Amino acid sequence: MQLKIRRSQKSGLTGAIFVLDVMADLTEAEAELVKRYKLQKEMVYISDSSDQNAANLQAGNMKALGSLMMDKLTKRRFSMQDLINGQHLECKNLPELIETENQVHVACQNIRGYLDVARSFDGSEQVVEIEAA
Image (cartoon, rainbow, N blue to C red; front, side, top):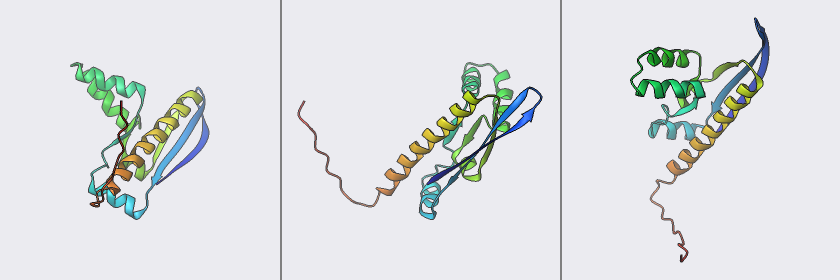
């Protein structure tokens, strides 16, 4: 799997807008594993504000439902399938851009781990040495 990242910027009403385009490029074998083990819906990126909106909804705040829907539309949360399709994110400042990029990178490393484990279901045996306490 490769994570393709493109950074750019554009002018907005309040100054520079930092743009991050990200896309996961999978091999055919990796794409098959994602499909077989239904990893498409694994959440890859959830912004802090979107995470808070989800917590508010679980606490019974129905206003948070609308906020969560907006988070999906504004790419403040997206799944592995969304990342495979490519995502265009706009950040208001560099710290937000860096945080977003780091979170996507960590999530891809986690998915790489899932794919590595998924490859291991071939009937082979592992022997793990357990050290004495």
